[in-house]
Image 1 (cartoon, rainbow, N blue to C red):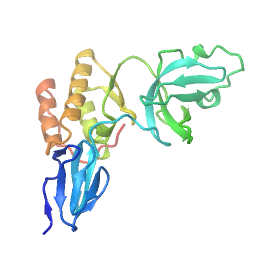
Image 2 (image 1 turned 180 degrees about the vertical axis):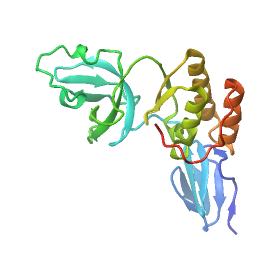
Image 3 (image 1 turned 90 degrees about the horizontal axis):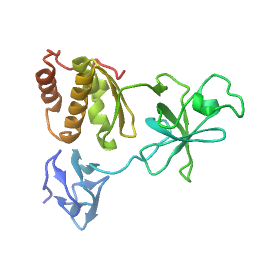
Image 4 (image 1 turned 90 degrees about the vertical axis):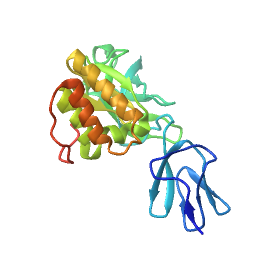
Amino acid sequence: MSELLVKSKEIAVPGEELAIGMDFLPSYGTYRDGDKIIANKLGLVHIEGKVVKLISLSGRYVPKRGDTIIGDVTDLLMSGWRIETNSAYSAVLGMKDATSEYIARGADLSQYFAIGDWVVAKITNVTSQKLIDITMRGPGLRKLNGGRIIYINTNKVPRIIGKAGSMVSMIKDATGCKIIIGQNGVVWVQGEPEMEIHAVETIKKIERDSHVSGLTDKIKIYLETITGKKLEAQTQKYPQK
């Protein structure tokens, strides 16, 4: 007889038995041992019909083509800049991908981006040797001025953004802050100092409580409490902006 031993959204640890019986199928983060499905990593249980998988709760960012990331300039090269990606690998921003403006060979590249500057960029290529190319030529891609940078678990990025951007839009509405969330787990927040703190605290709370059911309503109440601002009920009407 097949039986689930855990519930969806519970936290499982490596070696934990999740289900018994051949009716259930192992997926990401799990494996079959005889008639049992076992967790092979720390994660959040997710059950889709008869499929049992885990959503990672830890792990560094793995760069992927098409991802929008936030990174800081760590070095000036002969033909561009080296950018930290919050992963095991850095990226290279070439001059032709940095700006539509013509940059003459031998120009002082620090006039465009200096070491320590933060940028929003998109990954255009990742080679088998993990060489990463990025561009800043596209909507929303730019150098960041002011604000503060925080780091979050990359696996929690979708939860913090919310469906159709609903969660991050709620934080923006409540605090009046500009917020950009990189898929590499780097977040930029800019607003009034007190509201920046509230936004950061809220993001960290979502990161901690991402497994809690009814989280959107809980965050709405939390934001109303700390900001004193009444918020509309959240729907999926908000795009990420």
